[in-house]
Amino acid sequence: MASSLPSTDPMSPESMMNIRYWLICCANRLFEHGHCPEIMPVPTELPTRVVYVGTDDGLDPPRLQPGNGEIAGYVSLSYCWGGSQTHQTERNRIEEYMHAVPVVRLPKSLQDAIFLTRALGIKYIWIDSLCIIQDCDEDKDREMTKMANIYKNAIFTISAARAKSCNDGFLGVQDRRVELIHDSIKLPMNCLNGAIGSVLLYSYRAQFPRNDTPIDKRAWTYQERILSRRVVTFFNDAIGWSCTSCDMADDGLEVEELGATDSAFLNLHVPIFGRMSHVSQRLSICSRYGSTKISPMFWERAVQEYTLGSLSDLDDRLPAIAGIASEFHNTTGDVYVAGLWKSHLIQDLQWTVFKQLGEPSNNTGNKDIKYDAPTWTWASIHECMIMGFREEYDLHSDRVEIIDCKVDLVSPSAPFGSVSGGELKIRAPLRFLSHRQIKEMALCYGVGKYIGAVSFDWIFWPYTVALTSLRGRVAPDIESTGVWCLGLSKHADLNYESSGLILAKRADGLFERIGVFQIYVGDDWLECGTADLDELRSSWGDDYIVTDVTIV
Ligand SMILES: [Zn+2]
Image 1 (cartoon, helix red, strand yellow):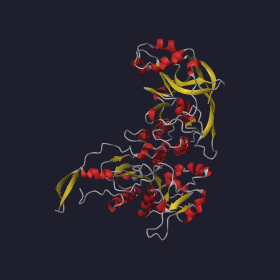
Image 2 (spheres, rainbow, N blue to C red):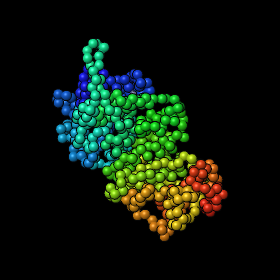
Image 3 (cartoon, protein in one colour):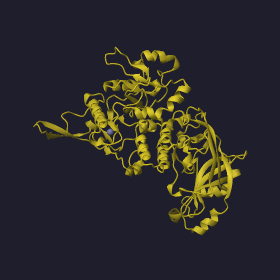
Image 4 (spheres, rainbow, N blue to C red):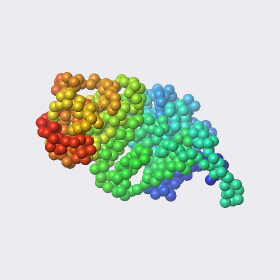
Protein backbone atom coordinates (compact mmCIF):
# COMPACT_ATOMS: atom_id res chain seq x y z
CA MET A 1 0.00 0.00 0.00
CA ALA A 2 1.41 3.37 -0.98
CA SER A 3 0.08 6.89 -1.03
CA SER A 4 0.92 7.26 -4.71
CA LEU A 5 1.17 5.01 -7.75
CA PRO A 6 4.41 2.99 -8.04
CA SER A 7 7.04 4.82 -10.02
CA THR A 8 7.63 3.79 -13.62
CA ASP A 9 10.81 5.85 -13.80
CA PRO A 10 13.99 4.03 -12.73
CA MET A 11 15.60 7.39 -11.98
CA SER A 12 12.83 8.58 -9.65
CA PRO A 13 13.86 9.41 -6.06
CA GLU A 14 11.77 6.40 -4.97
CA SER A 15 13.69 3.97 -7.24
CA MET A 16 17.04 5.45 -6.25
CA MET A 17 16.16 5.18 -2.59
CA ASN A 18 15.27 1.55 -3.10
CA ILE A 19 18.65 0.73 -4.65
CA ARG A 20 20.47 2.59 -1.86
CA TYR A 21 18.41 0.74 0.72
CA TRP A 22 19.27 -2.66 -0.80
CA LEU A 23 22.96 -1.74 -0.88
CA ILE A 24 23.01 -0.56 2.72
CA CYS A 25 21.14 -3.64 3.97
CA CYS A 26 23.43 -5.96 2.02
CA ALA A 27 26.67 -4.24 3.04
CA ASN A 28 25.63 -4.24 6.69
CA ARG A 29 24.16 -7.74 6.63
CA LEU A 30 20.80 -6.48 7.77
CA PHE A 31 17.57 -8.47 7.64
CA GLU A 32 17.70 -11.22 5.00
CA HIS A 33 21.34 -10.37 4.08
CA GLY A 34 22.90 -12.32 6.93
CA HIS A 35 25.12 -14.34 4.58
CA CYS A 36 26.40 -11.47 2.47
CA PRO A 37 30.05 -10.45 2.54
CA GLU A 38 31.00 -7.24 4.23
CA ILE A 39 32.30 -5.31 1.27
CA MET A 40 31.40 -1.64 1.22
CA PRO A 41 33.68 -0.21 0.05
CA VAL A 42 35.49 -3.11 -1.59
CA PRO A 43 38.88 -3.52 0.07
CA THR A 44 40.63 -4.33 -3.19
CA GLU A 45 42.59 -2.52 -5.86
CA LEU A 46 40.79 -0.90 -8.77
CA PRO A 47 41.00 -2.69 -12.15
CA THR A 48 43.71 -1.64 -14.65
CA ARG A 49 41.47 1.18 -15.86
CA VAL A 50 38.19 2.63 -14.62
CA VAL A 51 35.93 5.48 -15.69
CA TYR A 52 35.79 8.28 -13.13
CA VAL A 53 32.15 9.39 -13.36
CA GLY A 54 32.69 13.12 -12.75
CA THR A 55 30.52 15.61 -10.90
CA ASP A 56 26.92 16.71 -11.43
CA ASP A 57 27.86 20.30 -12.21
CA GLY A 58 29.98 19.15 -15.15
CA LEU A 59 33.06 21.03 -13.87
CA ASP A 60 34.91 17.78 -13.35
CA PRO A 61 34.03 15.67 -16.41
CA PRO A 62 34.00 11.86 -16.60
CA ARG A 63 37.35 10.47 -17.72
CA LEU A 64 39.27 7.28 -18.15
CA GLN A 65 41.67 6.70 -15.28
CA PRO A 66 44.36 4.12 -14.58
CA GLY A 67 43.59 2.04 -11.47
CA ASN A 68 47.14 2.65 -10.17
CA GLY A 69 46.62 0.20 -7.34
CA GLU A 70 44.18 2.55 -5.65
CA ILE A 71 41.91 0.84 -3.14
CA ALA A 72 38.41 2.07 -3.90
CA GLY A 73 34.88 0.93 -4.67
CA TYR A 74 33.54 0.78 -8.22
CA VAL A 75 30.58 -0.67 -10.05
CA SER A 76 30.68 -2.76 -13.22
CA LEU A 77 28.32 -2.79 -16.18
CA SER A 78 26.83 -5.82 -17.92
CA TYR A 79 24.97 -5.06 -21.15
CA CYS A 80 24.35 -6.22 -24.72
CA TRP A 81 26.58 -4.53 -27.24
CA GLY A 82 24.19 -5.34 -30.09
CA GLY A 83 26.72 -4.35 -32.73
CA SER A 84 29.96 -2.46 -32.77
CA GLN A 85 30.53 0.71 -30.78
CA THR A 86 31.88 3.80 -32.49
CA HIS A 87 33.07 5.57 -29.38
CA GLN A 88 35.20 3.01 -27.60
CA THR A 89 38.70 3.18 -26.21
CA GLU A 90 41.30 2.65 -28.91
CA ARG A 91 45.02 3.31 -28.83
CA ASN A 92 44.78 6.70 -30.51
CA ARG A 93 42.01 7.87 -28.18
CA ILE A 94 43.46 6.97 -24.78
CA GLU A 95 45.02 10.36 -24.24
CA GLU A 96 41.80 12.18 -25.13
CA TYR A 97 39.71 9.89 -22.90
CA MET A 98 42.15 10.30 -19.98
CA HIS A 99 41.37 14.00 -20.21
CA ALA A 100 37.59 13.62 -20.74
CA VAL A 101 35.28 10.92 -22.07
CA PRO A 102 32.75 12.45 -24.51
CA VAL A 103 29.75 11.11 -22.59
CA VAL A 104 27.06 12.56 -24.89
CA ARG A 105 28.53 10.64 -27.82
CA LEU A 106 28.59 7.30 -25.96
CA PRO A 107 25.81 4.72 -26.52
CA LYS A 108 22.76 5.41 -24.31
CA SER A 109 23.28 2.41 -22.00
CA LEU A 110 26.79 3.66 -21.16
CA GLN A 111 25.52 7.19 -20.56
CA ASP A 112 22.81 5.76 -18.28
CA ALA A 113 25.35 3.66 -16.37
CA ILE A 114 27.70 6.61 -15.76
CA PHE A 115 24.78 8.79 -14.68
CA LEU A 116 23.40 6.12 -12.31
CA THR A 117 26.79 5.49 -10.72
CA ARG A 118 27.23 9.20 -10.02
CA ALA A 119 23.68 9.48 -8.67
CA LEU A 120 24.43 6.67 -6.22
CA GLY A 121 27.51 8.50 -4.97
CA ILE A 122 30.06 6.03 -6.35
CA LYS A 123 33.13 7.47 -8.08
CA TYR A 124 34.12 4.77 -10.54
CA ILE A 125 32.60 2.40 -13.04
CA TRP A 126 34.15 -0.38 -15.13
CA ILE A 127 32.79 -0.68 -18.68
CA ASP A 128 34.47 -3.12 -21.09
CA SER A 129 34.39 -0.93 -24.21
CA LEU A 130 36.05 1.94 -22.37
CA CYS A 131 38.36 0.14 -19.92
CA ILE A 132 39.84 -2.37 -22.39
CA ILE A 133 41.77 -1.04 -25.39
CA GLN A 134 39.58 -2.44 -28.15
CA ASP A 135 42.17 -2.43 -30.93
CA CYS A 136 44.91 -4.11 -28.88
CA ASP A 137 44.79 -7.93 -28.69
CA GLU A 138 47.44 -7.98 -25.96
CA ASP A 139 45.40 -5.69 -23.74
CA LYS A 140 42.23 -7.69 -24.45
CA ASP A 141 43.94 -10.98 -23.50
CA ARG A 142 45.40 -9.48 -20.33
CA GLU A 143 42.14 -7.92 -19.19
CA MET A 144 40.09 -11.02 -20.12
CA THR A 145 42.07 -13.06 -17.60
CA LYS A 146 41.16 -10.47 -14.94
CA MET A 147 37.46 -10.56 -15.76
CA ALA A 148 36.54 -12.81 -12.84
CA ASN A 149 38.08 -10.40 -10.34
CA ILE A 150 36.73 -7.29 -12.06
CA TYR A 151 33.12 -8.46 -11.65
CA LYS A 152 33.68 -10.18 -8.31
CA ASN A 153 35.25 -7.13 -6.69
CA ALA A 154 32.75 -4.55 -7.93
CA ILE A 155 30.42 -3.17 -5.24
CA PHE A 156 27.66 -4.30 -7.58
CA THR A 157 27.03 -4.90 -11.26
CA ILE A 158 24.49 -2.90 -13.19
CA SER A 159 22.66 -5.27 -15.53
CA ALA A 160 21.03 -3.41 -18.42
CA ALA A 161 18.77 -6.43 -18.98
CA ARG A 162 15.98 -4.66 -20.88
CA ALA A 163 18.27 -3.13 -23.52
CA LYS A 164 18.71 -5.18 -26.72
CA SER A 165 21.60 -3.00 -27.78
CA CYS A 166 23.89 -0.49 -26.13
CA ASN A 167 21.99 2.28 -27.89
CA ASP A 168 18.70 1.50 -26.12
CA GLY A 169 19.59 2.65 -22.60
CA PHE A 170 17.96 1.20 -19.50
CA LEU A 171 16.79 4.18 -17.46
CA GLY A 172 13.82 5.13 -19.62
CA VAL A 173 10.21 4.77 -18.46
CA GLN A 174 9.40 1.11 -17.76
CA ASP A 175 6.83 0.54 -20.49
CA ARG A 176 5.77 -2.87 -19.22
CA ARG A 177 5.15 -1.48 -15.75
CA VAL A 178 3.09 1.35 -17.24
CA GLU A 179 0.91 -1.32 -18.90
CA LEU A 180 0.61 -3.29 -15.66
CA ILE A 181 -0.49 -0.23 -13.70
CA HIS A 182 -2.91 0.73 -16.46
CA ASP A 183 -4.49 -2.73 -16.39
CA SER A 184 -4.53 -2.99 -12.59
CA ILE A 185 -7.62 -2.73 -10.41
CA LYS A 186 -7.57 0.07 -7.85
CA LEU A 187 -9.36 -0.55 -4.59
CA PRO A 188 -9.89 2.10 -1.88
CA MET A 189 -8.37 1.34 1.49
CA ASN A 190 -8.37 3.14 4.83
CA CYS A 191 -4.86 4.06 5.90
CA LEU A 192 -3.74 3.94 9.55
CA ASN A 193 -3.58 7.73 9.65
CA GLY A 194 -7.22 7.97 8.62
CA ALA A 195 -6.55 8.98 5.03
CA ILE A 196 -8.09 7.08 2.14
CA GLY A 197 -5.37 5.26 0.20
CA SER A 198 -5.64 2.60 -2.43
CA VAL A 199 -4.48 -0.91 -3.17
CA LEU A 200 -3.54 -1.90 -6.71
CA LEU A 201 -4.31 -5.43 -7.85
CA TYR A 202 -1.83 -6.47 -10.56
CA SER A 203 -2.02 -9.46 -12.78
CA TYR A 204 0.76 -11.76 -11.65
CA ARG A 205 3.72 -11.77 -13.95
CA ALA A 206 3.61 -14.79 -16.22
CA GLN A 207 7.35 -14.87 -16.41
CA PHE A 208 8.83 -16.25 -13.23
CA PRO A 209 11.63 -15.85 -12.65
CA ARG A 210 12.58 -13.13 -15.09
CA ASN A 211 15.11 -14.86 -17.29
CA ASP A 212 13.94 -14.07 -20.77
CA THR A 213 15.38 -10.62 -21.26
CA PRO A 214 17.71 -9.59 -24.12
CA ILE A 215 20.69 -9.95 -21.78
CA ASP A 216 19.83 -13.60 -21.03
CA LYS A 217 20.26 -14.44 -24.70
CA ARG A 218 23.87 -13.28 -24.82
CA ALA A 219 26.77 -15.54 -23.87
CA TRP A 220 29.18 -12.87 -22.60
CA THR A 221 26.77 -11.53 -20.00
CA TYR A 222 26.35 -14.96 -18.40
CA GLN A 223 29.68 -14.89 -16.61
CA GLU A 224 29.35 -11.18 -15.86
CA ARG A 225 26.25 -11.95 -13.85
CA ILE A 226 27.33 -15.07 -12.06
CA LEU A 227 30.76 -13.70 -11.19
CA SER A 228 29.21 -10.62 -9.58
CA ARG A 229 28.50 -10.53 -5.86
CA ARG A 230 25.56 -8.19 -6.25
CA VAL A 231 23.53 -7.37 -9.32
CA VAL A 232 21.01 -4.55 -9.81
CA THR A 233 18.96 -5.48 -12.86
CA PHE A 234 16.91 -3.07 -14.93
CA PHE A 235 13.90 -4.88 -16.40
CA ASN A 236 11.12 -3.16 -18.30
CA ASP A 237 8.66 -3.74 -15.48
CA ALA A 238 10.83 -3.55 -12.35
CA ILE A 239 14.27 -3.13 -10.86
CA GLY A 240 15.69 -6.35 -9.47
CA TRP A 241 18.25 -7.06 -6.76
CA SER A 242 20.32 -10.17 -6.44
CA CYS A 243 23.05 -10.97 -3.92
CA THR A 244 24.39 -13.98 -2.07
CA SER A 245 21.41 -14.03 0.26
CA CYS A 246 18.41 -13.02 -1.79
CA ASP A 247 16.72 -12.18 -5.05
CA MET A 248 14.05 -9.51 -5.02
CA ALA A 249 12.43 -6.83 -7.10
CA ASP A 250 10.96 -3.42 -6.35
CA ASP A 251 7.46 -4.59 -7.31
CA GLY A 252 7.57 -6.88 -4.29
CA LEU A 253 6.64 -9.90 -6.39
CA GLU A 254 9.92 -11.74 -6.22
CA VAL A 255 11.57 -12.55 -2.94
CA GLU A 256 13.71 -15.60 -2.71
CA GLU A 257 16.10 -16.26 0.10
CA LEU A 258 19.13 -18.08 -1.19
CA GLY A 259 21.56 -17.87 1.65
CA ALA A 260 23.04 -20.81 3.46
CA THR A 261 26.57 -21.32 4.59
CA ASP A 262 26.56 -24.87 5.81
CA SER A 263 27.32 -28.03 3.93
CA ALA A 264 23.67 -28.44 2.93
CA PHE A 265 24.39 -25.62 0.52
CA LEU A 266 26.60 -27.92 -1.51
CA ASN A 267 23.48 -29.63 -2.78
CA LEU A 268 22.00 -26.39 -4.01
CA HIS A 269 24.29 -25.96 -6.96
CA VAL A 270 21.47 -26.78 -9.34
CA PRO A 271 18.70 -24.33 -8.55
CA ILE A 272 15.12 -25.38 -9.05
CA PHE A 273 14.13 -22.08 -10.56
CA GLY A 274 16.34 -19.82 -12.58
CA ARG A 275 19.98 -20.19 -13.23
CA MET A 276 23.07 -20.65 -11.17
CA SER A 277 24.15 -17.41 -9.57
CA HIS A 278 27.09 -15.99 -7.69
CA VAL A 279 29.61 -18.64 -8.61
CA SER A 280 32.35 -17.18 -6.42
CA GLN A 281 30.47 -17.63 -3.17
CA ARG A 282 29.37 -21.10 -4.13
CA LEU A 283 32.90 -22.08 -5.02
CA SER A 284 34.30 -20.61 -1.85
CA ILE A 285 31.78 -22.61 0.15
CA CYS A 286 32.75 -25.74 -1.79
CA SER A 287 36.41 -25.14 -1.03
CA ARG A 288 35.70 -24.38 2.62
CA TYR A 289 34.14 -27.80 2.92
CA GLY A 290 36.96 -29.40 0.99
CA SER A 291 34.53 -30.59 -1.65
CA THR A 292 36.05 -31.28 -5.02
CA LYS A 293 33.48 -33.90 -5.89
CA ILE A 294 30.92 -31.25 -6.62
CA SER A 295 32.88 -29.61 -9.37
CA PRO A 296 32.13 -31.87 -12.39
CA MET A 297 28.40 -31.30 -12.17
CA PHE A 298 28.84 -27.70 -11.15
CA TRP A 299 30.98 -27.05 -14.22
CA GLU A 300 28.56 -28.92 -16.49
CA ARG A 301 25.78 -26.74 -15.20
CA ALA A 302 27.78 -23.60 -15.97
CA VAL A 303 28.54 -24.83 -19.51
CA GLN A 304 24.92 -25.73 -20.09
CA GLU A 305 23.66 -22.32 -18.99
CA TYR A 306 26.45 -20.49 -20.76
CA THR A 307 25.84 -22.23 -24.09
CA LEU A 308 22.23 -21.03 -24.06
CA GLY A 309 23.53 -17.58 -24.92
CA SER A 310 24.69 -16.52 -28.36
CA LEU A 311 27.89 -14.87 -29.46
CA SER A 312 28.29 -12.42 -32.29
CA ASP A 313 31.92 -13.52 -32.70
CA LEU A 314 32.01 -17.33 -32.71
CA ASP A 315 35.69 -17.27 -31.76
CA ASP A 316 34.65 -15.98 -28.33
CA ARG A 317 33.29 -19.43 -27.38
CA LEU A 318 36.08 -20.03 -24.84
CA PRO A 319 36.99 -16.41 -23.93
CA ALA A 320 33.42 -15.58 -22.88
CA ILE A 321 33.50 -18.26 -20.15
CA ALA A 322 37.17 -17.75 -19.23
CA GLY A 323 36.33 -15.75 -16.11
CA ILE A 324 34.32 -18.63 -14.64
CA ALA A 325 37.03 -21.09 -15.67
CA SER A 326 39.68 -19.06 -13.85
CA GLU A 327 37.50 -19.02 -10.71
CA PHE A 328 37.20 -22.82 -10.88
CA HIS A 329 40.94 -23.12 -11.37
CA ASN A 330 41.66 -20.89 -8.38
CA THR A 331 39.39 -22.99 -6.18
CA THR A 332 40.24 -26.49 -7.35
CA GLY A 333 43.76 -26.07 -8.76
CA ASP A 334 42.59 -28.25 -11.65
CA VAL A 335 44.15 -28.04 -15.14
CA TYR A 336 41.90 -26.54 -17.82
CA VAL A 337 41.97 -27.95 -21.33
CA ALA A 338 39.78 -25.99 -23.75
CA GLY A 339 36.55 -26.10 -21.76
CA LEU A 340 37.19 -29.39 -19.89
CA TRP A 341 39.06 -30.24 -16.68
CA LYS A 342 41.85 -32.79 -16.45
CA SER A 343 40.83 -34.23 -13.09
CA HIS A 344 37.48 -35.41 -14.51
CA LEU A 345 38.32 -35.44 -18.18
CA ILE A 346 36.75 -38.84 -18.90
CA GLN A 347 33.42 -37.57 -17.63
CA ASP A 348 33.76 -34.11 -19.21
CA LEU A 349 34.53 -35.61 -22.64
CA GLN A 350 31.08 -37.16 -22.84
CA TRP A 351 29.13 -33.95 -23.40
CA THR A 352 26.18 -34.00 -25.78
CA VAL A 353 24.76 -31.44 -28.14
CA PHE A 354 21.26 -30.85 -26.86
CA LYS A 355 19.82 -28.37 -29.31
CA GLN A 356 20.67 -25.63 -31.66
CA LEU A 357 19.94 -22.06 -30.62
CA GLY A 358 17.08 -21.01 -32.86
CA GLU A 359 15.63 -23.02 -35.71
CA PRO A 360 18.01 -24.68 -38.17
CA SER A 361 16.49 -22.59 -40.94
CA ASN A 362 17.81 -19.49 -39.17
CA ASN A 363 21.26 -20.93 -38.94
CA THR A 364 23.56 -18.59 -40.77
CA GLY A 365 26.23 -21.26 -41.09
CA ASN A 366 29.89 -20.98 -40.41
CA LYS A 367 30.53 -17.42 -39.44
CA ASP A 368 34.21 -17.41 -40.27
CA ILE A 369 35.70 -19.37 -37.38
CA LYS A 370 39.37 -18.45 -37.00
CA TYR A 371 40.31 -20.77 -34.15
CA ASP A 372 39.42 -24.39 -34.73
CA ALA A 373 39.10 -26.13 -31.35
CA PRO A 374 39.72 -29.92 -31.25
CA THR A 375 36.62 -32.05 -31.81
CA TRP A 376 36.78 -33.57 -28.30
CA THR A 377 35.79 -30.29 -26.65
CA TRP A 378 32.29 -28.80 -26.70
CA ALA A 379 33.98 -25.54 -27.68
CA SER A 380 34.29 -26.98 -31.20
CA ILE A 381 30.49 -26.85 -31.58
CA HIS A 382 28.94 -23.46 -32.14
CA GLU A 383 25.54 -21.99 -31.43
CA CYS A 384 24.23 -25.08 -29.68
CA MET A 385 23.29 -25.80 -26.10
CA ILE A 386 25.62 -28.37 -24.53
CA MET A 387 24.47 -30.84 -21.91
CA GLY A 388 26.60 -32.75 -19.44
CA PHE A 389 27.17 -36.39 -18.91
CA ARG A 390 24.57 -38.72 -17.35
CA GLU A 391 25.44 -39.28 -13.76
CA GLU A 392 24.52 -42.97 -13.53
CA TYR A 393 27.25 -43.80 -16.04
CA ASP A 394 29.94 -42.14 -13.97
CA LEU A 395 31.89 -45.24 -13.10
CA HIS A 396 35.31 -45.01 -14.56
CA SER A 397 36.52 -47.99 -16.49
CA ASP A 398 39.87 -49.31 -15.30
CA ARG A 399 40.71 -50.05 -18.93
CA VAL A 400 40.80 -46.32 -19.76
CA GLU A 401 43.91 -44.21 -19.45
CA ILE A 402 44.52 -40.65 -20.57
CA ILE A 403 48.04 -40.65 -22.00
CA ASP A 404 48.27 -36.99 -22.88
CA CYS A 405 45.98 -34.05 -23.44
CA LYS A 406 47.31 -30.79 -24.75
CA VAL A 407 45.95 -27.72 -26.45
CA ASP A 408 47.53 -24.97 -28.55
CA LEU A 409 46.66 -21.70 -26.84
CA VAL A 410 46.14 -18.79 -29.20
CA SER A 411 47.72 -16.51 -26.61
CA PRO A 412 49.96 -17.80 -23.79
CA SER A 413 48.77 -14.87 -21.67
CA ALA A 414 45.18 -16.17 -21.90
CA PRO A 415 45.34 -19.71 -20.44
CA PHE A 416 41.52 -19.93 -20.37
CA GLY A 417 41.07 -18.36 -23.79
CA SER A 418 40.87 -19.56 -27.39
CA VAL A 419 42.75 -22.58 -28.68
CA SER A 420 43.80 -23.25 -32.25
CA GLY A 421 44.04 -27.04 -31.93
CA GLY A 422 44.80 -29.80 -29.50
CA GLU A 423 45.48 -33.50 -29.15
CA LEU A 424 44.00 -36.07 -26.83
CA LYS A 425 45.93 -39.34 -26.59
CA ILE A 426 43.90 -41.98 -24.85
CA ARG A 427 44.16 -45.74 -24.27
CA ALA A 428 40.67 -47.25 -24.13
CA PRO A 429 38.50 -50.12 -25.40
CA LEU A 430 37.63 -49.54 -29.05
CA ARG A 431 35.23 -51.33 -31.36
CA PHE A 432 34.11 -50.86 -34.95
CA LEU A 433 30.55 -50.42 -36.13
CA SER A 434 29.46 -50.28 -39.74
CA HIS A 435 27.35 -47.40 -40.95
CA ARG A 436 24.30 -49.69 -41.04
CA GLN A 437 24.80 -50.79 -37.42
CA ILE A 438 25.28 -47.26 -36.12
CA LYS A 439 22.32 -45.99 -38.09
CA GLU A 440 20.11 -48.64 -36.53
CA MET A 441 21.24 -47.54 -33.10
CA ALA A 442 20.77 -43.86 -33.87
CA LEU A 443 17.34 -44.26 -35.40
CA CYS A 444 15.73 -46.89 -33.25
CA TYR A 445 13.86 -44.59 -30.88
CA GLY A 446 10.36 -45.88 -30.30
CA VAL A 447 10.59 -48.87 -32.64
CA GLY A 448 10.71 -51.65 -30.14
CA LYS A 449 13.84 -53.33 -28.87
CA TYR A 450 17.11 -51.50 -28.92
CA ILE A 451 20.31 -51.71 -27.00
CA GLY A 452 21.32 -48.13 -26.56
CA ALA A 453 21.43 -44.68 -28.05
CA VAL A 454 23.78 -42.78 -30.27
CA SER A 455 23.78 -39.03 -30.23
CA PHE A 456 25.62 -37.55 -33.18
CA ASP A 457 26.92 -34.04 -32.74
CA TRP A 458 24.78 -32.87 -35.64
CA ILE A 459 21.46 -34.66 -35.13
CA PHE A 460 18.94 -33.07 -32.84
CA TRP A 461 15.74 -34.95 -33.07
CA PRO A 462 13.82 -34.62 -35.37
CA TYR A 463 16.19 -32.85 -37.72
CA THR A 464 19.75 -33.08 -38.93
CA VAL A 465 22.05 -30.11 -39.30
CA ALA A 466 25.19 -30.08 -41.40
CA LEU A 467 28.15 -30.53 -39.07
CA THR A 468 30.08 -27.96 -41.08
CA SER A 469 27.65 -25.33 -39.87
CA LEU A 470 28.27 -26.23 -36.23
CA ARG A 471 31.94 -26.99 -36.42
CA GLY A 472 34.40 -25.21 -38.65
CA ARG A 473 35.35 -28.37 -40.53
CA VAL A 474 33.86 -30.87 -42.96
CA ALA A 475 32.08 -33.90 -41.46
CA PRO A 476 33.82 -37.23 -42.10
CA ASP A 477 32.11 -39.56 -44.55
CA ILE A 478 31.00 -42.27 -42.13
CA GLU A 479 28.84 -43.98 -44.73
CA SER A 480 31.93 -45.37 -46.37
CA THR A 481 34.25 -45.60 -43.37
CA GLY A 482 31.95 -46.66 -40.53
CA VAL A 483 32.58 -45.44 -37.00
CA TRP A 484 34.50 -46.41 -33.90
CA CYS A 485 33.09 -46.60 -30.40
CA LEU A 486 35.51 -45.63 -27.67
CA GLY A 487 34.27 -47.01 -24.34
CA LEU A 488 34.98 -44.63 -21.46
CA SER A 489 32.61 -45.27 -18.57
CA LYS A 490 30.79 -48.14 -16.98
CA HIS A 491 27.34 -48.38 -15.59
CA ALA A 492 27.23 -49.85 -12.09
CA ASP A 493 25.08 -52.76 -13.37
CA LEU A 494 27.37 -53.75 -16.20
CA ASN A 495 30.95 -54.91 -16.03
CA TYR A 496 32.11 -53.49 -19.33
CA GLU A 497 32.17 -50.07 -20.91
CA SER A 498 28.66 -48.83 -21.48
CA SER A 499 29.12 -45.26 -22.63
CA GLY A 500 31.71 -43.28 -24.53
CA LEU A 501 32.56 -41.45 -27.71
CA ILE A 502 31.71 -42.14 -31.34
CA LEU A 503 34.76 -41.44 -33.45
CA ALA A 504 35.49 -41.22 -37.16
CA LYS A 505 38.90 -42.33 -38.40
CA ARG A 506 40.63 -40.00 -40.82
CA ALA A 507 42.90 -41.04 -43.68
CA ASP A 508 45.94 -39.95 -41.60
CA GLY A 509 45.01 -42.38 -38.80
CA LEU A 510 43.89 -39.67 -36.37
CA PHE A 511 40.36 -39.70 -34.98
CA GLU A 512 37.67 -37.02 -34.72
CA ARG A 513 34.79 -37.05 -32.29
CA ILE A 514 31.39 -37.12 -33.98
CA GLY A 515 29.11 -38.07 -31.10
CA VAL A 516 28.50 -40.09 -27.94
CA PHE A 517 26.85 -43.42 -27.23
CA GLN A 518 25.39 -45.12 -24.24
CA ILE A 519 24.11 -48.64 -23.72
CA TYR A 520 20.87 -49.01 -21.82
CA VAL A 521 21.34 -50.98 -18.67
CA GLY A 522 19.62 -51.44 -15.35
CA ASP A 523 16.39 -49.44 -15.06
CA ASP A 524 17.05 -47.70 -18.36
CA TRP A 525 17.16 -51.04 -20.07
CA LEU A 526 13.98 -52.38 -18.50
CA GLU A 527 12.09 -49.28 -19.55
CA CYS A 528 13.34 -49.29 -23.08
CA GLY A 529 13.59 -52.88 -24.28
CA THR A 530 12.72 -56.47 -23.70
CA ALA A 531 16.03 -58.28 -24.13
CA ASP A 532 17.76 -59.56 -21.05
CA LEU A 533 21.28 -58.72 -19.96
CA ASP A 534 22.76 -61.79 -21.65
CA GLU A 535 21.27 -60.78 -24.95
CA LEU A 536 22.62 -57.28 -24.43
CA ARG A 537 26.06 -58.61 -23.66
CA SER A 538 26.12 -60.81 -26.72
CA SER A 539 24.96 -58.02 -29.02
CA TRP A 540 27.28 -55.39 -27.66
CA GLY A 541 29.81 -56.23 -25.09
CA ASP A 542 32.69 -58.45 -25.96
CA ASP A 543 34.60 -57.32 -28.99
CA TYR A 544 36.29 -54.22 -27.64
CA ILE A 545 40.05 -54.09 -28.04
CA VAL A 546 42.05 -51.76 -25.84
CA THR A 547 43.80 -49.41 -28.27
CA ASP A 548 45.76 -46.15 -28.21
CA VAL A 549 43.99 -43.46 -30.21
CA THR A 550 44.71 -39.80 -30.86
CA ILE A 551 41.70 -37.54 -31.16
CA VAL A 552 42.09 -34.10 -32.73
ZN1 LIG B 1 22.92 -9.26 0.35
